[in-house]
Amino acid sequence: MAQAAPRVIIGESDRWTSDLLSQLVRSARCDAEIVTLRDGHSVLEQWRKKSPVLLIADWSLPGVGGLDVLREVRRQRAQPPQPFFLITEKVDAASVKAAVSLAPTAYLAKPFNAEDLLKRLRQVLIKPGEEVVCPLPERVPQQSLDQYLEACRESAAGAPMLASVQDTLGLLQGAVVPDLDALALRFRPDPQLTAQLIAAANTASQHRGGSCQTLPQALQRLGVKHSLNLALGLALQRGVSLDDELLSATGLKVWAQSQRVAELAHWLAGELEADAERCFTAGLLHRLGDLALLRTLQDWHGSGGELDAAAVDKALGKHAAPYGSALRTRWRLPLELRELIAAAYSLGSGVFSREALVVNLAAEAARLGPEQPVSALQQHKAARMLQLDARTLERMPRLADVV
Image (cartoon, rainbow, N blue to C red; front, top):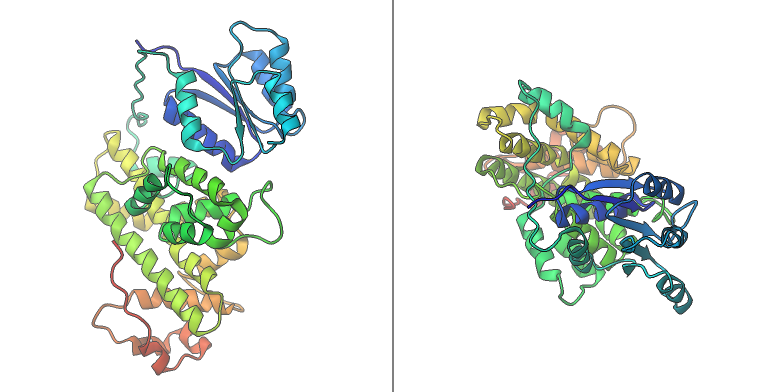
């Protein structure tokens, strides 16, 4: 028999780690009531208002640290003891001794093992024989598709993940940990994973030096294990795969277009001694809004909304660009990267960087049909400003669809 939804308090100042913890809790117990907080004072206040089934706190919480939160919780001598997961970067003997004396349910060193944490969460949140059923959220009665998409735009989870990357994540669980170069190669095709790892690497807790604008830069800053944890959290999200046949077919075309522009931009940048990785990233992410919209359309269809090819095309034409803009802003991708992504659509007016011209021309080249001559690009604004001759344009690779 199903029990009341358990309340879980998460105290974590880093947004992306907090999101990962929330996703792991939802994966362990999909109906959990999750309260996420950024400082120790708020954690204690919420704990005193209503004791949760589980409290998760980072040692380094601002205000009152996680160890002091644990100390206050244990001072109440509750029976049975309050389940408490302490997460920390402190693994020295003195820190471990101080924590163990307060008997945390789990003491998890950052970057933690997401698989291990998920098992521990299930042990705490699900009782033997308990059944948990979590239906999809219902749509508002009489709500049109346009109204639904408008309402979901600011909270959209982002794009689904490529099946090949999901398979890779499955293979990496429990396997020999790859090095940064190998991980970059495995994650490189996926727009969602690339965007969120860049965003995570640019958060305040990770910010050291300049902004990260490419996947290799993000992986270098986050490290292999933390990057794998974040990737696993994404893979566990609802709707991370496009299961609907119509949406999946459309998604494959969008992924192919993104990959085509990215590869062309990388090639052109290499020819012109521009920043090839930044150009690749901008090309890869320029259709992120289309993919995020397809994921939202899947939720609409899954909750009973009607959907056909004409409705999908109309929704993409009207909502994809606003979805992409909202995601890039909400995830706080670096402004320079956002401007480079925008160049895939238009140059506007003003002074253009070499990279912006490269991305713009790559997007134009990707739209060429198989029978259209590449020389037609020579009169394109970006080609003229880059002073590209016909010989260089003719050497531009013709890329097959990425599926």
